[in-house]
Amino acid sequence: MKYSLTICLTAFALCCFNPMKAQKTFGTRNGQIIFQSPTDLDVKAINNEVSSRLSDNGSLSFSLLIKSFRFKMAEMQDHFNTEYLHSNQYPRGDFKGTIANIKTVNFKMDGNYPVEVTGDLTLHGVTKKVSTKGSVTIKNGKPLANASFPITVKDFGIKAEDVTKKVTITVNCQYQ
Image (cartoon, rainbow, N blue to C red; front, side):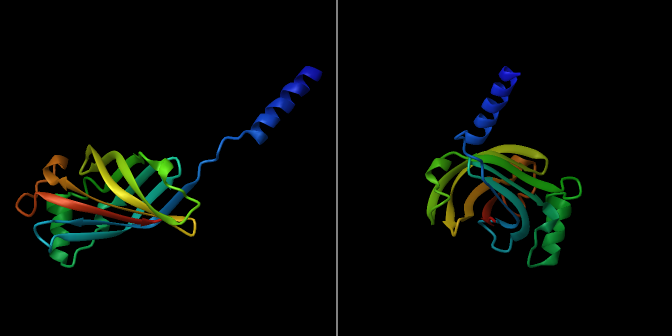
């Protein structure tokens, strides 16, 4: 009995007084992702319904519905969904990755911190590795993530060369 009590007290002490740091996760459901053709300014779509999670250990994810992208012209939006992204067949876009230099971000101090992001982008049913530089800005303890990077549409099985060969993806997410 004395041995069991000692084991229980030791386990309790390890759980309560363990110096392990708890992971903090921030989230948003109204992040923004913009698709923009660098050669045709009319080819621009904005999605303000992006779900994203950012953890202070560097884990980063984004998820969105393709049909939530909005264009200025309804006809372009229709072509985007039916002819190019096939949003009925491939309804989601996702990114799962990490911030390689997360230790340089001080989540307790306001400031702008340059970051390097790598991960897997899934679009149109195709997953590819992507890497980019961006920033995490801390204001009042809440992070804002920004990044911009190009993709070649044919790399994701998107046949849109008649409209554009590349798209710049811009990410803006204010986390809570």
